[in-house]
Length: 193
Image (tube, rainbow, N blue to C red; front, side, top):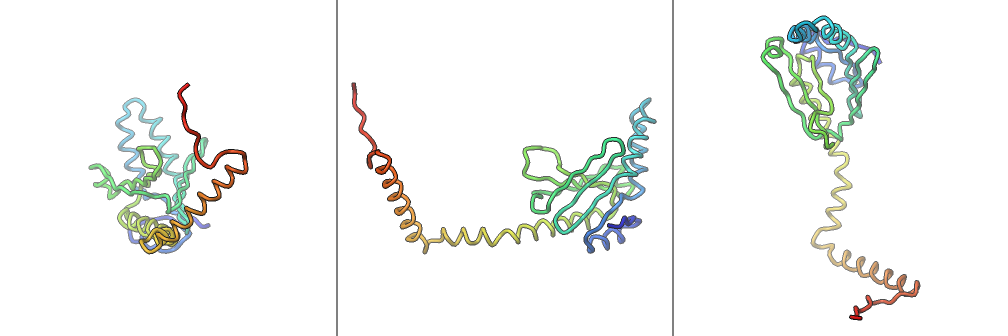
């Protein structure tokens, strides 16, 4: 795959139409990291160095199946998520992020974790990215929907007779197995003793 920089919101939106794609964060994210590093006080140089390397190695890879986020130099981290697992997508931005034209896209799954599974940051075309993820999420659910429809048709009101007869057959087989194993066909009565 080729790495392609994302200089503008329209370029980000255009890249989303072609898969697979590798996206880089916008350079305004580095500015945001520098400004937030100032809040660390004396730890400013260390935090800025960490966030600089995070910015330089941060990659978002989108393909037909899902999204993968990679970052890190010494400790490489990679998080992959299929579109079918996405449950919810949130946009959030603070004052500084809005000033820089950025927002965070928080992608959540049905895991027990209350935090976002993936946080996508550094895009000026964050609304296009959110809409893209929603469309892919919906498309993944539509592909799995036919099996759900078959199950719903089996439970439809007209299929009650078939369901009842199947349950009776299963009960008869269980009774036959119980008799074959030396048990009784009816549960034993309780006696006080």
